Image 1 (cartoon, rainbow, N blue to C red):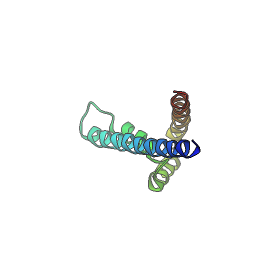
Image 2: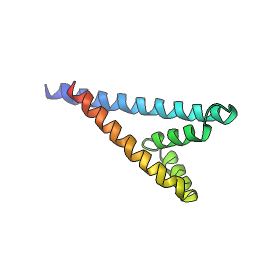
Image 3: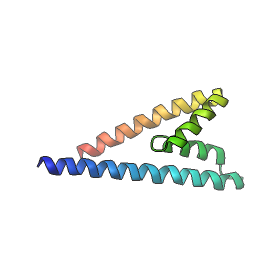
Image 4: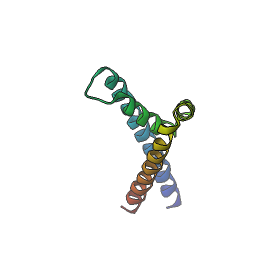
Length: 99
């Protein structure tokens, strides 16, 4: 039994990582498209994608840190959004564990 739950945890970790990467890259792609289309907020989608990918990629974390240093007003808003998103992810992962 212990092996199975360990394997399940490893599988869940891999699935979460892949989901985070797919979601982050989708937001980056939407951001790039949004830079050229007036209906989409390209910069907003790029920032969301960077926030998501910063948990997996060092380069995204460093780029986000540079942006926060360069734009301190936006940094406070981004920090608040990051905390809220982390709370949602924790809440959703706890819900799935119970199921």
